[in-house]
Amino acid sequence: MTVRKNQANLTQDEKNRFTSAVLALKSSGRYDAFVSTHSDFIMSDTDQGERVGHRSPSFLPWHRRFLIEFETALQSVDPSVALPYWDWTVDREPTSSLWAPDFLGGTGREEDRQVMDGPFGATKGAWPITGGIDERDFLRRSLGGGLPLPARQEVDVALAVDIYDVAPWNSASRGGFRNTLEGWRAFRGTGIHNRVHTWIGGNMSTGASPNDPAFWLHHAFIDKLWAQWQQLHPASEYLPGSATPNVVSLHDTMRPWNDVTPADMLDHTRFYTYDSPA
Image 1: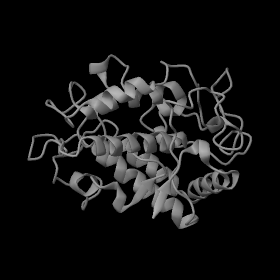
Image 2: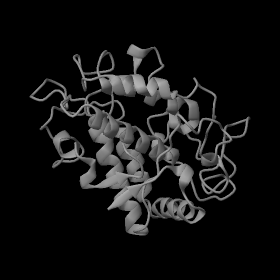
Image 3: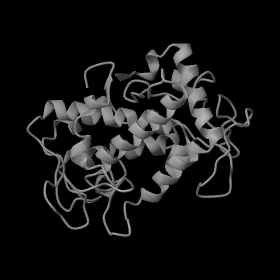
Image 4: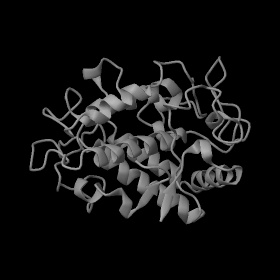
């Protein structure tokens, strides 16, 4: 069983294995396919008119499946690798070990936000960006340039919400856990998940955010928080539970997959566990 660990507790060997597997996927072209998938679904509108990856109830199960597929790809390179998670309520500074040259590398240089150090930095030449929002082909970050990272108190407030989601099932939904955690316009830019993307800045503030490998560690923690919420509220089910226009309900398939529903993604322990109670 795969065990996902807090990145702060990884050994140097575990860090090296993770970054090496990521680089191997990049060099083979498989990594960029994940970027394209996320970009295609960031606005959550398919040709069927349904919101899928963001701004909708399926935000959490969609990304759970997305992370499982990426983790499986990493393990095809190195079976020992698991996705680490980044607890940004604790490791909150641009100087945190996450951003060290021996792991993800740090913030970008001032003139163009280009990341220069670490395995994905410009000096290595191993991380050309494709499918971004502009023609710049290098990894960009501006750590700490946006709103402050969410605090634990804000996370606890979200975890206390006892209903999964509410109508209108989109970015304007107020009062449900999903959009409290995801955080769109209804939260005046202060939503939890979104704020982490803007705090990192650069590629992470675009629809092609998986271009920054930090994406996976951020979303692994978002997934861990959902697992924790599920444990805290076992009687609170995924909503909507029945057919609802323009929304993926409990037993609807999630695109781009033709055989996965939110119901299939509710029990993460079928696939992996976390190194501490969810």
